[in-house]
Length: 186
Image (cartoon, rainbow, N blue to C red; front, side, top):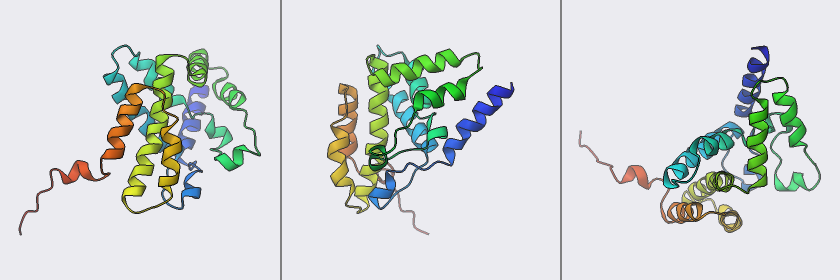
């Protein structure tokens, strides 16, 4: 149980690690754990829309996809030009001695290879999480997301992901609650 406790504390560290790309946007912020939650939630929705998908594997991939960042940190695109992180080694060290370590390794390899339906959906969920953030920032008047969105949208691989992206981009970030807004007089 000691190794499991260590893994849980390591995963908890993702709450403390900021996603570094937001620094270049000049607005917004998010921890790696917040990103992983949103990615997993999006994957859950995508799984419901994709009957052929193995929903459990899809959700597990999304939940785990950034676990190595507890050891490597989140490198932005500028940093990646100069720093090479060894995510495979970070993951191997994180799961060493765990009875389910092989399952984690297999899920991460599947995600990184991107060949299966679940891996492609997980990849799109990862991108859609960022698209949601960029759209919300854009809707409140932040201009830099407009420069980024076109590049992130081009990364989508599945029809489900592309359709969800279209819906996200045509909606307003606060539309979900304004649809039911009722001003009650005092």
